[in-house]
Length: 190
Image 1 (tube, rainbow, N blue to C red):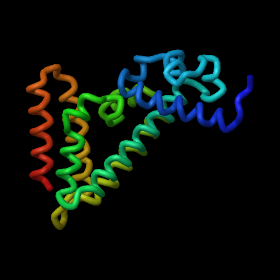
Image 2 (spheres, helix red, strand yellow; image 1 turned 30 degrees about the vertical axis):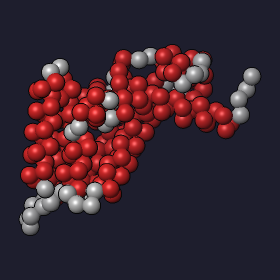
Image 3 (spheres, one colour; image 1 turned 180 degrees about the horizontal axis):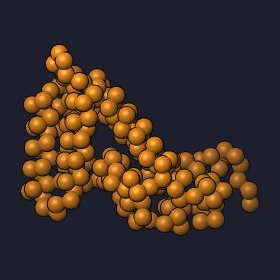
């Protein structure tokens, strides 16, 4: 039975959303096409009618995750009356973010895989990083003569690096210290 164009579009969005979450939870190689389609409640056979390849889905799912995370950052900044950089650091470097990888930052979850992937996936990550940097450029303080973009790059690197390390250590106390130290360093730079 053929599905309508509208239903096909909904199915496609459902697959991209599910893949976005599952790739962040399990990594690009940690889940196959059949499992991705099952998660979306669709058959494996419908995959290639929607996507050219798993790589195509990786690119689209990464773009979705990066965009949605950027939107979350923008909301955190909009909700923070002052100390916006500190508020962003508290949000990003939280136990909740650390523990919910599937809903969290694609840079921290998948960034290490991007260099081993296609130029299209690398371009998606580049676009995502540039979006984060644009937001940071609006809140990172820079003294006269300082390059604001470089300070934004340093802040983003600290955020992502600290989250990656906090997830990697397998020790709750050290993990919290990593998050706290990085958040404190960012707050002092604000």
